[in-house]
Image (cartoon, rainbow, N blue to C red; front, side, top):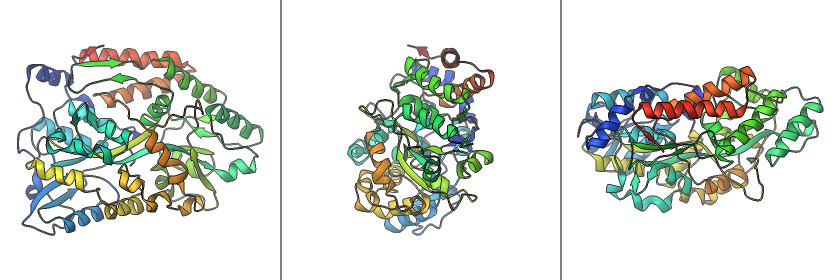
Length: 457
C-alpha cells in the first residue's frame, strides 16, 4: 500500500505533546481517550450499505483502493458484526483526524488503518488496544515474520498486518537492451551499470534518489544493517538512537557519489514530474516495493511500448542477501472503540480469506502478508501482463517478503523523517558529505527526544 511519507506531508501527530504523555506513562495515567468514546457504527456515516442492521456495527477508517468490495464481502459473510466504513483520507489526512480525536478523547473510529511505521507513534499516545487480550498472539504463524515483528512489541500486539512492501528492482528491459548493459544484481554492478549506460549514450538516469524518500531511504540503509532506533513500548520513556552509524554512512556515501557524478537524479518523489519521469524513460530503474507495479500501471501517461521487468533488489553482499520493506499497512483497534471485541473481529477477519485477498490483489494491487495466500498457487503463479506475463511474485517479491525480518521505528517517526529530508536535501544542494548529514540528523533527534522527556540510551 502506498505510504503517506511519499507525499512529504507533515502530520499533526508529530506536534502532539509527547512530553506530557511520557509524564502520564511514568505516573500510570492514561492518555488515549475515554472508554466507549468512539463514534461506533451507529454514530458514523457509512460509505457502504449495512446489510444486517440488527448486528453490531464497527466503524472503520481505511483508504484502500476498492475497499468497499472487501467491506461488502465481510458484511455478507458475518451475521453478528457489520463494518461501517469511512474513507477519512489517505495517510497523513487520516492521521491528522485521528490525532485530533485522541486529543479530544472522542471521535476516533473503532478500527483504523495505520501504516506499520506509525504504530509506535500512536502506541505511545495510548491510542491503540493491545490485541493480545483477544488472542491475537495466536495469529503469529499466519503472517510473514517481518510483518508480525512490525506490529508487535514483546508479547503485545498492536495491529493485524494486511499488506506490505517487500522491495525489488523494476527496470526498463528495453533501455538496458538498447544500450547493451546487463541489469545489475549487486550495488557495485549498479554503479557500473549507471556509468555504462551513460557512456553508451543514454541521456537519462539509472534511477532517482529522492531526498524526501523517507521510508524508501530507511529501507536502503537497513539493507546494510542500519538499526537507528531501539525502542520498547513497555519502557516508553527510553529510546536508543544510532542514526549516524558506519552502515548508514556507507550507503549514503554510495548514493552521494552517484549523485555528484550526475548518474542519479534527486527529484522529489511522487510529484507529477517524478511520475512522468518514471514512465517516460528518464529513469531506467525504479527501486520499488511490491505495490510499485500497481503504482506504475496507474500512471495514465505510461509508455505503452516500454518493456518492464522485475528483478531482486541489488545486494551489498550476494552471499548474504538482506531483504527490506518499504511501506505496509495494518488494522488497529483504537482505545475509543465502543465494542473492542467486535472491533478485533473486524480487524482480524477482513482479510483472512482467499476471496477477500483475490479482490485486494486484483482490484487494489495489494501485496499480502498472510501466509495462506502467499503460498497459494494462485498468487505464486500469477502472471502480470504489464510485465509481459512475468510471474513477478515468484521471481522477486515472495522471496523478499519471506526474508524481511522487521524494522524498529521511533515513536516520533514523522519528526525523524522530516530531519532526514532536510539533512539529505542540504547535502545534495550544498555538496556536503554523508557523515555530516547523518550526524546532523543524529544530533537533532537526540536533542528532540530529550526535550520531549525521553532518556536517550
